[in-house]
Length: 422
Ligand SMILES: *Cc1c(COP(=O)(O)O)cnc(C)c1O
Image 1 (cartoon, rainbow, N blue to C red):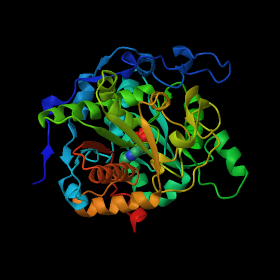
Image 2: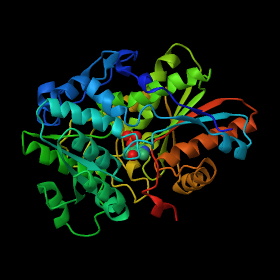
Image 3: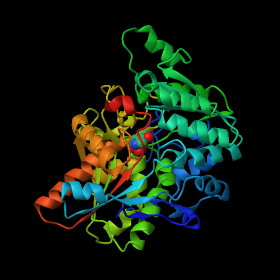
């Protein structure tokens, strides 16, 4: 029997959880790229609307989710928690494996959780146009969908290699009236400067972010929107972990290991952050971030201040980074091709609270194929890093005859990524 835990629609969390209130240390502040001094909220004003800047800097533990956002969350939330019965049986592991499935969102990934919130706060702040970057297209489609919901225009710079490899999400963005161009593009000074150099330009998230910010800075009613990395993005994603907490309580389970794939850290952070205080209060719980060996930010990067984009327009963030000029190889998990990482997750790794591992694409593809066949869900290439991480843990549990509880987030479906798997 397949075990599935649904929450009732009135059990959607009514607040986001802000881990900054509970950390026994202070994060290093973002710095102004020109003065190298901590950046003021006003200095971020040309890029983000004030309510999001306040959330970025807030130390309030619980932040109420506005009714308008709850109403939009109700389109697809609460999302189900499944027990991976078939995978357990296949692996013959004594471990219990659960996964939180975010692929039921309108655009097929967890990104909608923050896209809706960001579109809402922009709308009430007078923004007319949102501009952003996207890798594989999940973020661009989530923001285009949310922009359409709140009556905002959405402009998307899509990393060129993904624009070419993954045409389906570009169509999805257009379905929601999003305007999508390949990056580097001829729409910005930075894009034009790169195109002039010639050669094969796969693009990168860092380049696309630079283009999007340049656009946002050129018009006061246009704001920039980021799909990962920043504190407010991880904050919005905590609906994932808060729901998992309730679902595990209904099952009378306590997690021993929580796993997620890691690109910029938003689905991973959203999953684990609500459990971090349990670890501080002495519970024996492990958090594992899974990233590609091709873009090994947390496992091989340096922990230092760096820009979030290639041109150096964003504030300097203290994070693990491969360097802002790093252009990752063309792996299929486009959403994991980012040189940096969320400052919150970076610090938790630095403090030894979060473990990070790097996996090869071959291992994650095998995991994705197996999962598609036996659990009946085609995972996003990004999410398959979490599946592969969970399989490693389940095999270890078998070797050690341990009955541990493994929980992972399946951040999205891969129905638009099928060309990657065949
Ligand atoms: C964008 C994306 C990721 C990577 O981004 P994070 O911010 O690290 O979560 C992972 N999985 C899916 C399905 C995505 O769309």
